[in-house]
Image (cartoon, rainbow, N blue to C red; front, side):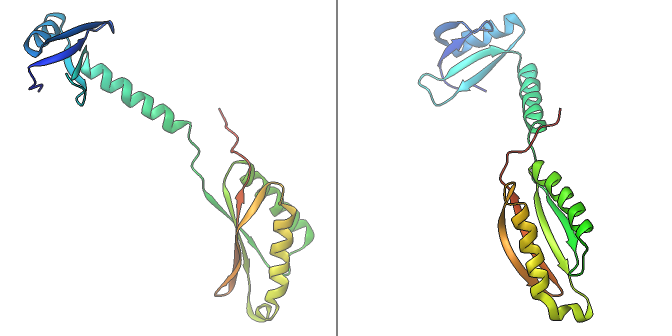
Length: 166
């Protein structure tokens, strides 16, 4: 409800009518079967526009939905490794990591240790650092290898912008 006596009116065509009484502005909107919407309440006098408010809200919601659809939400993808992993397995996991990084996601590398493997944490750390070095052109290390219980974790972040899939 517009309580101010005079408003600056913009009609449904986008043309500026000028400063008119708010009762007169409401009467013009009613005659055209549209709504009187206060667009800029901070201006003196406040700016009001004659429009179909339901259609305006619908268009606004549609634009918001479309902009949200085009955004890429960054996810953390996990790759699990073991200290005794073979070269072919490393190559395969490297290919997956490249795919994730090109999509703009983060990659968390987890080196899992069991039993006597706990004595060779340095081997696991070396393999993680070598993995990160091979991916240096696509990523940067966000978190260096850190021991958490029986697993050594490292986080890589993509340096490229995500590719958009239409």
